[in-house]
Amino acid sequence: MTMLIHPQIDPVAINLGPLKIHWYGLMYFFSFMLFLLIGKKSIQQSKFLNLQIFDDIFFYSALGVILGGRIGYILFYQPAFYLNNPLEIISIWKGGMSFHGGLIGVILSIIFVGKKHHIAWLKLTDFIAPFVPIGLGFGRLGNFINQELWGKPSLLPWSVVFPKTDNLSRHPSQIYEFFLEGVILFMILKFYSKKEPATGKVSGVFLIFYSLFRFFVEFFREPDSFIGFLFLHLTMGQLLCIPMLIVGLILFFSFNNSD
Image 1 (cartoon, one colour):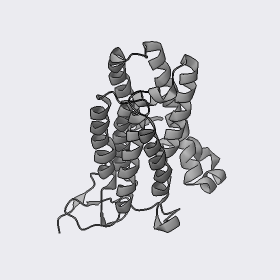
Image 2 (tube, rainbow, N blue to C red):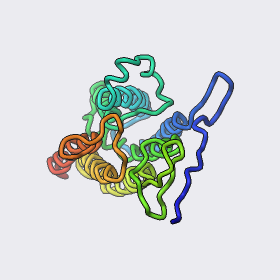
Image 3 (cartoon, rainbow, N blue to C red):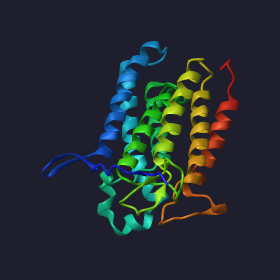
Image 4 (cartoon, helix red, strand yellow):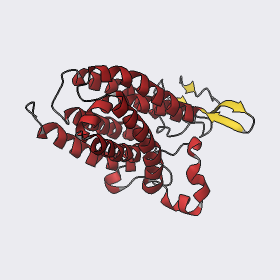
């Protein structure tokens, strides 16, 4: 049987003695930099954004991603562990970020920016939605480098052995998510947003496709050992995707082109 072996990349990208820069942290850095580069070009075509508003979007969204992602992971996945090990809360370089928590953090940040600049917050989420898959893609690459969030055992020819885990060949679920939530979702949103749909629809499309892609990949991903399967034999990730899908459908079908 042909199988691939994880290259066992050192999670520490740059080691400067007491200062260690992890690949996982660099993935966030690359995501934020690309958001800046692409976003600043996009505001030139925007009818309601300027550089000051965009800078606020970037700053508060980055804050929302980091704080929301970490707090969401703690609350959704391991509240007891972090309650007993509070110093571990700041160890973000070890992984442990929740997309759903980060999404909530970004939404709250965007609502704040919208009120500050008197702009409907759904217009702002429509603007940033096509850029979110960039961060998702880089994040999944970070998960792959860290050998975390691996898939279930598999005999498929592209299955991967993660030596830090065991000697079983497994679905590279991080790579599945990289392509679906990163590459494919980016292409869908960029294509759809060019049609200049009604307010809220781009945000709706993002929520719909992300939740469907994530729900699907979770069938190939090993559930977290400290949680396992939950209601109806679904994972925490799948359960959190259900309200996302419902909200996405409401947004998509509640607005028309006359808005």
